[in-house]
Image (cartoon, rainbow, N blue to C red; front, top):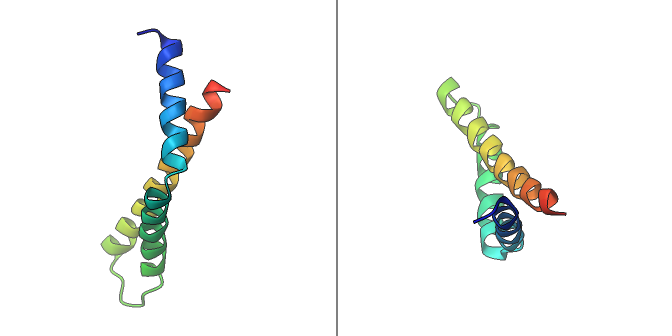
Length: 73
């Protein structure tokens, strides 16, 4: 399998995932929940780190999928 085919496949799959309503709703809900959790007064340092890490990972997922698409354009 050539690198071109791999890039094209990644781009197509990334586009499909970014347009999946259920996946996007799940990611948005998880991210919103993580960020909302940061507003709690009784949050431990560990919980804050975990909530920030989750929000960051979900953002990175979205950015990576977009990079796969842009790499093919």
